Image 1 (cartoon, helix red, strand yellow):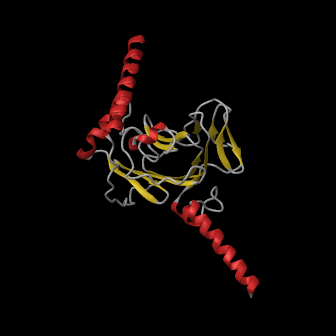
Image 2 (cartoon, rainbow, N blue to C red):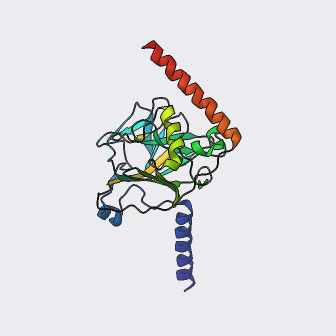
Image 3 (cartoon, rainbow, N blue to C red):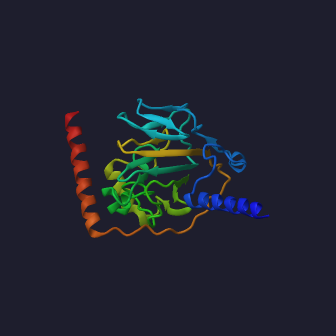
Amino acid sequence: MKKQFAILCLGCLVLLQSNQTGCTSEPNQLTEQEKTQGFTLLFNGKDLTGWQHSGNWKVEEGVLTRSGKGGSLVYEPELVPDNFELKFEWKVAEGSNSGIYYRPGQYEYQILDNQKHVDGKNPRTSAASIYFCLPPSHDATRPVGQWNTGRIVCQGTVIQHWLNGEKVIDLDYTDPRYAWHVELLANRGGNLTDRGANLSLQDHGDPVWYRGLKMRSIPDTEKLKRSKVEPAEISDTAMAAEQRKLQRIMEGRARQQQKK
């Protein structure tokens, strides 16, 4: 009886730890529910089949990670559908910066160590933000070295970012309330109406790990669940630094145009 009780307690402890870290026992496999929903497994957990890179990405123990120089890791078999849901797990080392690009231009789900990296000082460039466009409602990241669960849902003009089970962005980019945010991204070179890109994992030269990448096309008959999410406030100091950065970007773009 005591032995059975001990086994039961051990099982409960493993389940609790799994819930706390936000990961599953087999992240690189589809669940029966995901199969029913129409998800496709983008990473098989074994090799880089379907992914294009320049020799700087590799698979270690069922995880995508980078080493050396070379650039982004790009999924080639299919373009990201216009209306889609993407699930993934990620973790970073201290000070690391990466991102997931899911539409043309500047559509980026930011991956970041908010505590150590300078981008963490501005919610608009922090983890789970639409980078340089809209900040998440709050910092829902887990400590460095722990797995985070991410989710992106896009349907029509609505973009949702989720982090560790919490919806932190719910944006309709045609809503006049967010016109300034959309304009900011446009000034950086992004257009939120663009569609049809390859999924891309950004390489900034920092240690980063991905697994459990799964995507499905959302049918037109499926109604997206909406709820109000307030973006985090941005301090005057962060706003001023942001404007200086934008000015440098625009000046650089102007110089490039003059060379053509």
